[in-house]
Image 1 (cartoon, rainbow, N blue to C red):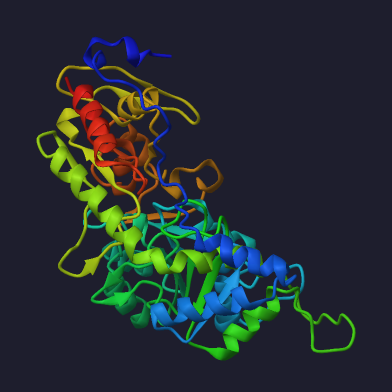
Image 2: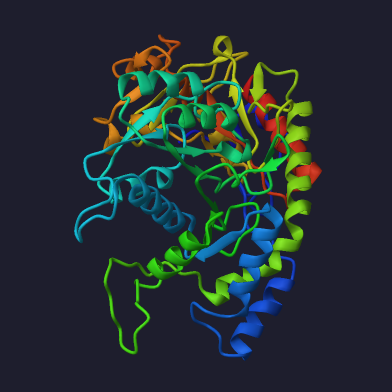
Length: 433
């Protein structure tokens, strides 16, 4: 492994005394109050005042009638997709998914939790390429996908790194084709599109309180809906679908997905600080943008005309002409230094050597081994066969693969000081020397 601490370019830079994280939990003290209250009153199960209160507070904040607390954002996605599937196709037999054998259009550049629930329910994800304006699902590629697969009736769309996608265009296309939308707002709590909170645009939407999110419960998530019937159904499904009987009676498949009152206590203590966290994340983004403006890089794009992100993660994209040699295998990578150029591999390795955490951009789902036989649609049609060329920089069609190849997520922890961030910015500058 290359020793950056001995590289002459970095000779006057000191490693951080304590690690600078990508995005770690930020506790304020109130979390302990509500957790202790749950323990003191013995409400340490999947019922209690904390759950009731966080459901109410989140619903009020988002201006949506119902928010159902669940064990994770992934659990919320699973039940959202099951709701959508039953609404479209009817309930499935036990042992079969509601999407059995059916295709679903999905965001391509996202965490696999966005799309895995499609497989849980027996469906086949069709991945839609990314547009370059916001790094989210490309509406033009979605229109092409409906030309190829006009029978599809479900779209799963994520807002990447806290920046809303072009959700009005996606909604228009969905309505034209009679399709439902499951909106993955796991990364974008607090972000708005045309002044409306993300989480309000799907037929079913979800948020996450995972440990690295803008506010956290260490885990947990919520399903968001305008329907009381659907909210009640999710509460039932998430508690093993127990019927209203004196004994344990089960008439449909259920899950152990309900949020814990302990986790809800942490979330309850975090909610008052959501806007503070967003402001801190925005300051980080703006310091990076200013500090790196003289380099051949661009920050992750934001459509300020239509949206206000929550700035969850700050990312950068290296200009093609200033990419040094860099290749990735399935689990390893190789890079070399070249004057005036750099690569995600070099930058991430350099900041890691000084005890700061970054990470690659999400690897597009159509490039993941588990989904390599699934369809992938670009504006031009099927995108299969172009990704391998893109890895070596030979194609300009597969936007997601290009962003993955040239992009990286920067340390975005809201406890990072301006001085610490300046040091990270200086390390990035040295990578281009």
